[in-house]
Image 1 (cartoon, rainbow, N blue to C red):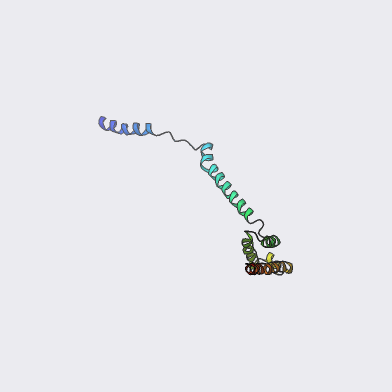
Image 2: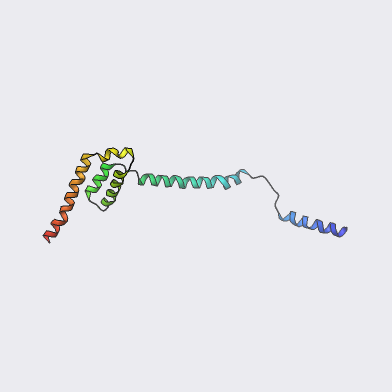
Length: 125
């Protein structure tokens, strides 16, 4: 029996001395495990929503889009695409845009002018 008692007591000593004592989680541990990752994810989501909002901020103003198209700068075709999306949208807030006569006239005048310019350039060369 002395041999079996010695064998039983050895694993207890070696196992018990290598592991730390079990303690309940502290507030610091909870903070590090849950709240800090939650804060990081929240910041990332807020930044993503902010950039998305800024990117679409001026998109609904058809008058500004028409002015940007008429300016005929490098981004005018992108603005034309956005205006076409607004006209194609089934959203009721864009229904008045489809009936806007002044917007249609200004865009038609720009289109007529734009279509005549390449012909005049070709005739002069």
